[in-house]
Length: 352
Image: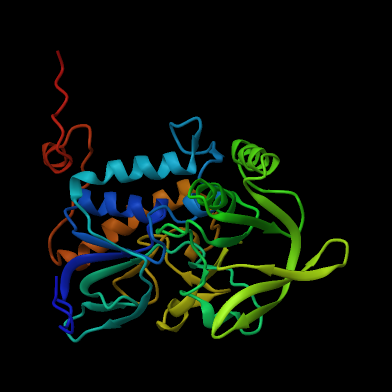
C-alpha cells in the first residue's frame, strides 16, 4: 500500500471489466479461460449489480440449467466460478476516464485514485452506475457524510435518535438492525406499505407493536438546524398536518437510480444512451473497448442475462486478438481440454 501522499502504483493488466453484475462476472470467467488477466471495477460496495440491488432475494427462472435461483444465489455462484482466476476487485469506485495511450493500451482512472493500464476494456455496467436517490431538500446536502447517510451505517448509533426513510428491504433491515443497537429508531415512508420481503415486514410490525420501533407515514418538506447541526426534519403527514421530527442521524434508503455517467464522454458511438457494438466481437466504435449486457445495443438486442452471457463469450475471443496479437486462439471445451482443467484447478474426468 502506498504511503500517505504517495502516487498510487500503476496497475498493468490484460483487461479491465467495468461492472461487477452477472454479465461482468461471467466476462471474467470467459477471459480467464483464454488466460486473459482481468481487474474488475464497480461503483457499488459489493459485487452483483442489479441482481443484488434490485432483486437479491427474488426468483430468477431463465438461467440455463437452473430452474430457479435468487439474484443473490446467482451472484454467489458466479463469484465461486471465477475463484480460480484470483481476480482483483476495485469496489466503491467509479471510472472517471479511459484514455488510449500511444502504445494502444488504455489508461483507466477511478474516483478512488486507482490507475490501471490495460490492453482491453470491457464495459459491463448494465444500465449505468447505480447512485443513491438523494432527498432533495434545500440545505440538507451540507450534512451528507456527517449526519446524513445514503447507506446503512457500519458503526453503532446506540443512544441516538435515528430516522430511516424508505420502504424496501434495505430500509427495513437497517431499521431492525439499529433497533437491536438500542437506538431510538423511527422508520418513515409516505404510506404504511412496504416493498420488502414478507419476513422483514413482519419483523418490523412486531417491533412496532412492542413500541421498540416507531413508524410515521409522512413526507419531508424541510429541515431544522442549529449551531451547524441538523436537529429535525419538517414533515407533512397524510392527514395534512405538519410538525418537526427530532433526530441525530438521518439515513435515506429510497433506492438507487442508474446513470450512464462518464461513459457518455468517452467518445464511443451511442444510440439512445446505449453503446453501439458489432455482433461478432461486441466491440464498440473504439477498437479494444467492448460492451456486454444491458449497456450495449445492436439489431435484435434483448436485455436478458443469458444474452449477456453469450455476448461475454464472443467478446473474450474478440479481445484475444488485442491481448495476444498474431497468436491463433483455438476453441477448447472445458469437458476435454487439459489446459482448461489446469486453469480451473479441476481434475479431468476419465472414463472408467
